[in-house]
Image (cartoon, rainbow, N blue to C red):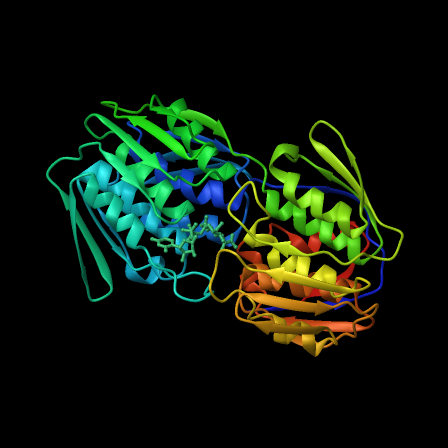
Amino acid sequence: MGRFIVEGGFSLKGEVKINGSKNAALAIIPATILSNGPCLLKNLPNISDVKLSFEILTKMGAKIKKQDEHTVLIDNTTINCNEVPFELAMKMRASYYYLGALLTRFKEANVAMPGGCNFGVRPINLHLKGFKMLGANYEIDAGIIHLKAKELVGGKIYFDVVSVGATINILLAAVKAKGVTIIENAAKEPHIVDLANFLNSMGANIIGAGTNVIKIKGVESLNSSSYTIIPDQIEAGSYMAMAAVTRGEILIRDVTLKHLESILNKMETIGVKIKKYDSSVFVSCNCELNKADVTSQAYPGFPTDMQPQITAVLTFAKGTSIITEGIWANRFQYVGELCRMGALITVDGKVAVVEGKQTLKAAPVTACDLRAGAALVIAALGAQGKSEIENVSYIERGYENIVGKLKDLGAVIEKV
Ligand code: EPU
């Protein structure tokens, strides 16, 4: 799986370029299945989850041509299969987006129950409820979800829990359905808007993405498109966290400031100085870090995907911080690893109490998921001594060239 050796205590200085959004890319790649011609995707992050998504498409018969590291031409006209192989679906949560995309394309989809990061039970009842409202029947047999519809017909779908994945899947299934679909209590995350913009660029008729009511008027066909994916706000936030714990100065380039509001706001509370430019942000920190209380929420609230990273930062702050996880049942599994480095954190259900401490000490630690891994990198960069972080393939699922980027900023880090 690979290991990072990180020597802490070096101030990070310089510039870092943020890559395209993982979670937008993982929704937009399956959406290309709906086009009647090739699609050119730009600013795709070069990460293992994106590579896995290409592997899934290729297995189904797609032709994928890489034009450069971040630009790919996807031709799905040759796809002749409505099934995602079990061994691939199991590796990634976002494999469930092939349900919505294949259902629209073939009126049938067969996809294994998805794998991915484990932060407690991750149900897909809302996805299935939405597909049913559109006229599909489903059956789960031997871990495979089988979906079938004679025709897809639009309707009103209300989600009692805000779900990014269910909102995306229903967008994919409704975009060519007969009539109008209305999603109420839809998720508002930037990657929902990005997917809707991509679908509209192919000829879809979607309005309201980014609000909690999305209206989709089904269209007959969708055409080729050339589309640039938005920057990854979680990658940007993670580098801010690294600047904070190392008392660094980093110009974070190629970001969308609007998507970073909740993270910037919390960084300022913690004591990070922020200068905003059009598509970049300069963060610096040369003082003691302040405590802060953080509750993760659906967008535009503070993202759950930054919760482990901000917790790592607050272990270095002065005072006691309360972190409340508002989305996932069990997203504090990494805390034990931070405690190995000397962090003082207690967890009770969805609440963690961090007693800030001015120093952490290096230790051998293990990443248990993607953002947990990022939190350990942050802690190791701020700690005294050489930490060893195991299971870094989790981190590489979502952070392009993290070792190279950190080295360019002056970090002492190696992958072995
Ligand atoms: N939920 C249900 N029923 C469902 C679906 C979700 O009850 O059918 C609940 C979940 O249990 C959870 C809440 O709704 O409590 C939110 O889950 P959501 O469906 O929004 O999560 P997701 O679509 O599975 C995406 C991201 C996650 C991110 C969450 C929340 C992708 C591929 N994954 O997951 O990203 O944490 O939204 O913002 O987009 C990550 O990037 O590290 C990551 C885990």
